[in-house]
Image (cartoon, rainbow, N blue to C red; front, top):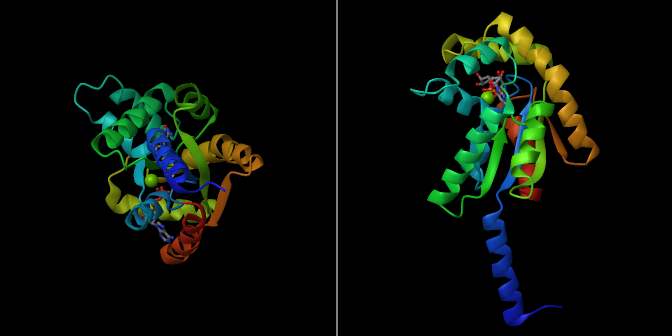
Length: 215
Ligand code: ADP
Ligand code: C5P
Ligand code: MG
């Protein structure tokens, strides 16, 4: 039994360690499964920062002087996964900037990543030992529901990929490239699966129970 000053010291050291190594939850699921919607609700209720790989790529696409704008644009329309060298730098930079501004902000929801083998390898290469992946939050939702939600979103999102043609490709990419990554984490016991086909509040009730337990 450790008590008194030593306990307090260990507690502090533990806090410092946590503060130094970002704690990451990967958020995965098909296009339109509700990743962004649920992440926003997690941020309201728990001390997490939401980083969407897709949002970061769209930002980079429209950044004046970006050398990757055209490439990102083409990949997004085609529903293909951008080479990880680009994405991992955006993610790393966003994490570093967040922690630099506020050292208490070391918990991250990384939404829409890793989406394929290349993403995963890039993460391991750059972030191994520098960040801890706590678990993968998987929003499980049928393809038809996913497509329907994205088409609905497309009425106002202005996204170049919320249309039937791009969506078919995005679903294929999801099935062929992302599902195997989820299965890989599943084998490590790291996946928390949520039935995402229900209403926003029903889905969030399940999300809450995951974060109350281990967030
Ligand atoms: P993702 O980030 O996984 O692509 P979003 O959170 O952007 O998904 O949601 C896609 C669309 O579906 C948005 O228009 C959103 O408002 C809507 N939506 C999200 N969750 C639900 C839900 N549980 N039921 C119905 N519509 C939803
Ligand atoms: O997650 P979101 O739906 O915003 O992603 C939109 C698109 O951004 C994807 O279909 C893909 O073209 C690109 N993307 C990517 N790599 C990621 C995440 C998103 O290439 N890790
Ligand atoms: Mg999203």
